[in-house]
Amino acid sequence: MHVLMMTLYAAIAATVLATVDPRTDTTPERLRHGLKMFGAFLGIGLLLSWILFPIPW
Amino acid sequence: MQSRDDLSDDLAAHFRARVAAEPELKAYPLPRRTLAVIAAWLVPGAGHLVLGKVGRAALFFIAIVGAFTLGLALHGRLFWPAADSPDALSHFDLISVLWFFSQIGAGLCYLVPYVAGWGTNPQPWASTYEYGNTFMFLAGLLNYLVVHDAFDIGAGRKR
Image (cartoon, rainbow over all chains, first blue to last red; front, side, top):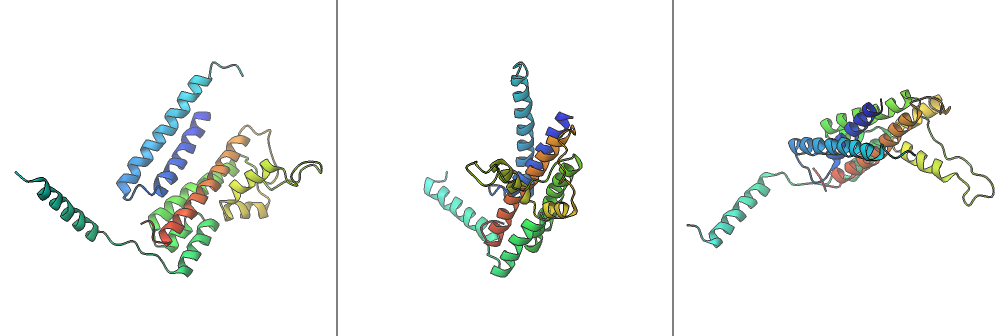
């Protein structure tokens, strides 16, 4: 459930952020930027969960 | 072999041709710009629709209205600035003001359910309560960016 919610959250945030980013001008640029951002959100989320997992509190 | 000067001349000509081929950025008339910003806040994506950016309008509408509706469906709560205890520094509970600010960014997505009474009864015992709140905060905050984007396009700063 948590990973599903995180994926949905990352997809929505990356879609909107990549579209409003003034550094991207064309649809292929926005698509590439959005995919990179989506991957970064998921990757960093998983990395943080892996690092925080052993902490008991 | 081309000299350095020849190369820079070529590059400049190429650059000039590329700039000339692209349509110039133009500001929209003030009433249309104003309407776009107000519409963008009320209905996510409507500002871009006013400015003729249909694809982006549909994308924003689906993403933001979808996120807010998902939040409500997951038993998220609509926040309203709550009064704090009389001896507190502020008249309002500041965290509820922040939550309210982030949710009200979604415009009618917030106002319609609030008036209808959906999401006004907190259900913190629901296992998806925090997920729901988070999606509603996300929707409102993203819509602030979309409003700014509509403003930038209207002012001729962005395509």
